[in-house]
Image (cartoon, rainbow, N blue to C red):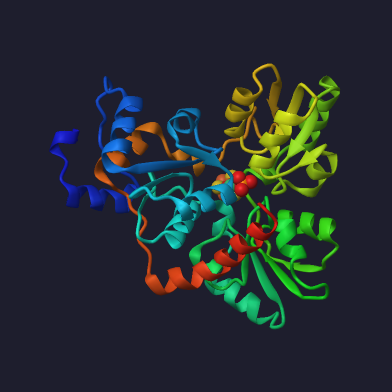
Length: 338
Ligand code: 13P
Ligand code: SF4
């Protein structure tokens, strides 16, 4: 189907099946220029996560980690938020700024970590630990957020845990790797939900160790969603923004990067004279892409702006319940100047 022939009810039906506006785009169209035009015409802002493909990062108005993106989504005065990221991120934008139209280029861009915690099972788990406060990583569904007391991201998790009185019993969900890292960093004994990110749990310790031998001056930098043996080897651990900032200010010129490869685009742009080596996973690939993040493409981004579909629609009661723990996170972050 070509753009002039689009029938919106049919397109919506297709979105239910495939997750995006499945329409052929004219190969001669300058998508960069078209996206700029649509931004102006519709007063739209593009918020992109670092794991998006380079072309999408290059057309974005803001690129950031989960905390930065949530803060930007809360404050924007644009009429349309185009979220180039995964579903839980776009959903968080809608929770925080409900009067805006929030678009996601591919509705099927999910997250293995968010999927590892179905709300019904989590409700039972929570009931088994009645006197515990629930801290949930932002990589979860609105249903899990609504069952949580405070949300955190990889850049504020330590401060959020430490903001609770010593001795307070805590459930941490859904990422067991980030949870174990926080237990080690803060000394707090937390009950961990057994979830993990499919990208960060498959880094090969053996291949990373071999890379370190071949590049003795390279520093290993890692995201806290990685498993403990990789984190133990790391010279620096941080959120995506934290890792990027580290490479900008650190004196080394070579890094092995243990997180999704999309971040290398901004690292290379910020420090063109430095070398960034993606940490290899334990399969036949040389780098590690998130299949959910990479469902978004420049074509899908253009189509979703043109037709203002797919849109994030939320139940109002769920939205309000999920908003409370996010607001608590944003308030604590403000107190720490994050
Ligand atoms: P941050 O960008 O907040 O560090 O999160 C990484 C991630 O896995 C997002 O899906
Ligand atoms: Fe989820 Fe991992 Fe992909 Fe991030 S990188 S969206 S945590 S599966």
